[in-house]
Length: 455
Picture 1 (spheres, rainbow, N blue to C red):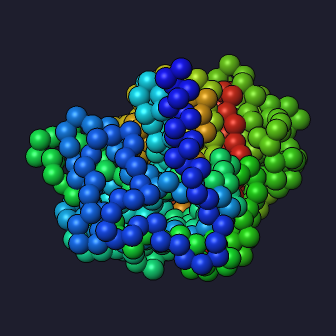
Picture 2 (picture 1 turned 180 degrees about the horizontal axis):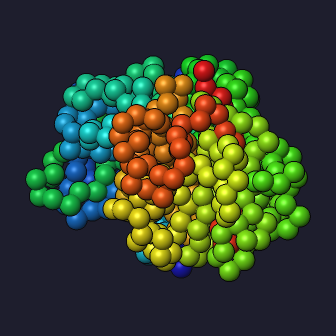
């Protein structure tokens, strides 16, 4: 009965007003916390000099000051935010939700968050999925936006929600772009004070002012060159199409692919089902069933993005600059973005200093990654390989850059000289090559394979 009463009171609070105006509507009167309610945590919120000031306290989960207005439809939210030093972390929730017992029986606010990050990683303006999926758009995906946030100054925040798309700006610099599958038509707006774990962090403050919202009638224009986190299956946004991205897998057929060292697509060992391209398991044997598949096209400088899902203990890889000139047995030769269940597959412990682990340049360079950014077997991960026209190469895993190198430089060649590839002359230095998906005998699935050629 108490739980039902709690849900009823929350519903009354949030349904008291709705948003349908096409003019700016202020959410903060500059003098009081009227129209706002603290939830989930016990951080202090008060008004000082025309701003809402949130202050950290010990022994509290993340705290949220929630607007009583629940917004439906497309809208743009603007406000100004300030933190005083690099130790502070905060955020602005939008299209979010409240569950009075969602955090192990305690209150929980969850959903999309505009990140406010004072730390050295500089991810302010990124999109975090609070209490749900973690990071959607870490700002490592947009390095030119990482200098936009200014410590101990007010920063202008802009958030646009249009259909299933979210876009953010910070001090008029475009930061994030997500096309999602979970985006609902309405949700809460809230101001976060992050939990803390140390006594010396008590009393850290975050300031919010000039908070206003408006029905979105005209989308802002994104600058060229932004990477879109597109979570929809095997489709591109109009922005991506205009930017030159194209799908390498249409979700329905194997058009554009063939077997390595074969005239056509393998007759067995691969399947297309429910928008997913999968290797069929065959006792973990390398290229012993259907064999590797490669793109019919070849590429030189490019930005390649793909989602992959491993089976437990699985092993596979995405190779690039595959020339098919070696005519070798087993898997075709090329630079390899390693796909591996590090926790269970023995290959993770082979090689040199971890250079055969997930997202590594196989047998050459270890991927430096944190466990929190690895999605385990059975979950989808996003890989990304960028090859610039100057031969600089970067590997990403779930939005985080995990390594970089230059093809053909002295360091690269010295690594090749002590690797399994030393028998192949000029390994990895071809002007162009195919993209390859590896059959290593384990069930591995791919989707959302897209590429943009760079010039």
